[in-house]
Image 1 (cartoon, rainbow, N blue to C red):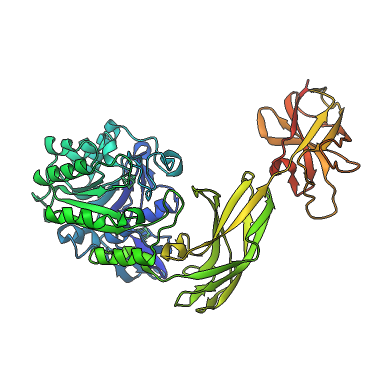
Image 2: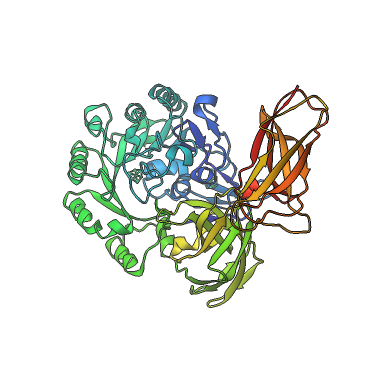
Length: 584
Ligand code: SF4
Ligand code: SF4
């Protein structure tokens, strides 16, 4: 279930709820991490800097399962007076722990205990197609914030011993990536599980015997903590994630490890993702779990897979999912089953655009859902949006584009016209696909609710030229001038873009200091009698360099073709000619 906020909401995240990442960054909640907000603090650099009092939530809604489960939110009026309390959704489950966190009060927030979600690493040895951490697929270290540098075992041990001292009680949920790839996981778990209740989610392909040979105690032996009474401590749950379609998966090793852990007294459960290519295997694994008295959970596929497919089910897949796991479907997963459907009609399914230009993709979208769409640009409203991928099998998500429609309602079978601006600045030449979909807020795409987006093909074209000048280098005295004679040819087999307005294309040169290449210190222009038509057609030009008083030193002159105030051909793929300039 998602919580929509109206007005100011204060939240206990950051006081008694934290996400701890491999480089020591601590985020207030998963919504902050996903929205690329800065971390609250870094444990290695800053030490512990958790908040003392609940602070304002600046998200429009709270939608991540853990964030909803373990934080308490308070809606307040402009004077800060309490209007409404949203208790953590875990409050009726695992009551002995959740009550202390989920039933906090604004005037007395929980500061003696906290819920921690710790990812010691975001790397993984598996290659699950539906996961953002799969080995070799996403570049975990580049694409995921706070992934590196991972802290060392010593650093983590210091940090967690400090946290264990600081809080009288806590719950630690360890996840990843694959947490057992980190050398720190077992030592930290051994230490923290002596005072806190701990849980771990793992693919159990590595280091499992450390659980049965070390000092990690299964949960279930309660400890008395003043003010809390009897609370569970130890390793209270091992969630074994079952990934049969990953490279390296070994069913016998998985079964053997589950049984080893169960027989050592740990509470073990198995989680299976209903990704379409493994969905129909679920009954086989479920049956084994039932035979062996191990809890089995079928979770719905969420997000975007490694090939760029957005999560969603066909009608037969959905029917099967509902039959096989009726009791395991969580509320948080229900968005997969919403009814969203449309038909997109593009005016131009294939478009050409010059590098660094903005293309206006136009068309209409018809609402085939059974409910009307609340369209608009504000929170909770749908608007036409698109995302760009490279054409080909791997649909790597490159950038997103949005429209800003006025507030209207589009009824069933109603149509919405759109003009979607596709800004290609910074994209290399090539063939791309634009996926046209409907988006609500930051990440709520209709494709995640079963709608099938339509694609437009986009060809980003590049231009080239050849510029020759009669000098390999230029030497100037301070305040001196020089003249370069040269020729310009059009080598791309098509006319160059002329941009808007009457201003002609010219030869343009930019002088950069060698030590600061991004900083242009002077610009020069050379008039062209006409534009070259072909690669053989040489059009002469004369470029006067009169930089005035400049510091002595080494410079670089970059010669290109320019449309004044609009573009340089280098932005559209051409390679400028560069010569050194020395002022001495
Ligand atoms: S209400 Fe939810 S989204 Fe907002 S700060 Fe709290 S946990 Fe994060
Ligand atoms: S085992 Fe888990 S973390 Fe690893 S690739 Fe699969 S889903 Fe991702």
